[in-house]
Image 1 (cartoon, rainbow, N blue to C red):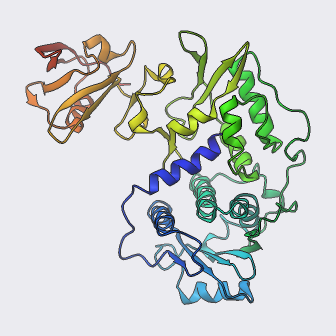
Image 2 (image 1 turned 180 degrees about the vertical axis):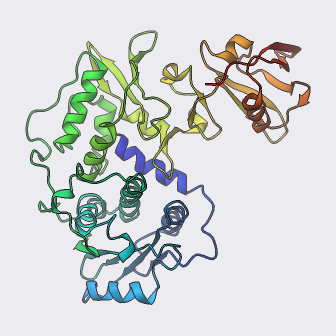
Image 3 (image 1 turned 30 degrees about the vertical axis):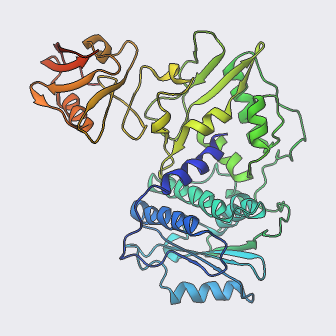
Length: 433
């Protein structure tokens, strides 16, 4: 499901990003050795971007000493000058003590309005510690950071929290302490449970329907009731097998419902055989990733396995395709009229022409959208691009800039090689979107 894919996408993204700036403080101090070196570097890198994007100085400490965790965290917050790397003095300190099996997230005064104690308690108990209980400490920290980013985005757009599930108990505060559940303890039932929340297996089991739209609604209904059962009929068989290996938290389910409440779906797109379907959203709705469906008999089931393999999420929680797989998946029929940049993000493109290049200076057409301006101009997949209006092309970014800068309605000529034959395409630049 999408909220789980977000965690995978974040981990895949941050593993490839540049290390944090040397002027920043140490973001991860893993004295308890709960993280591998790669995991610690990944968390630090993602927290580096939290500072860069939202001016939040977020540190993590793990220890094995026991004692008064609240007092210790407060002392360390001052001693480490948490928030000093932030222009606005915004700081978060996460301390995980394995001796007492407790975790505390301390919040600076400058962030108390955005992150009241009810929210902190909610993300600890409903997002972080379920991962800890499954032995996935790094994933728990990263999954919680995702919700911290979401709350920061809401704050920047002056969005309140009246419709957020933790809000009934919201009060200003400086953090919260929780059972870390490193021993696999069950989820507590005390923080902001929705009135109709249910445990896996309780209530009516959603059934796959004879249209993708209705199946998706059944899924969102299951999420709204926190039905995390992997055996629901709305899932394809491979999806059920996958979900049995995943941690599905209450906060993830709440977040998916909140996210798609404001999404506006396009018409369903089907493949030629009517065996696969996609529900997608406008390019502008960057948080609303598409849904994939596979037909079983006369019913449509969610293919979350394919989504998990293809969709990634960036540091601002916006979705994109794995760029290495963008032209190698069975659901690409639903995106033939879209353009994608070199990172796999969907774009509003005039030409709907995706180009690529290599270290040898070769530039070629990776794909064209069906019925697009690029197709009408004459471009075809695998065309090698030599010159645009007489200017030699040695990198795909040159071609992208040329497409962007082309004045609408003005003549354009592109020299190419197709099937080992040199030729020239000529026409008028399309109107701007």
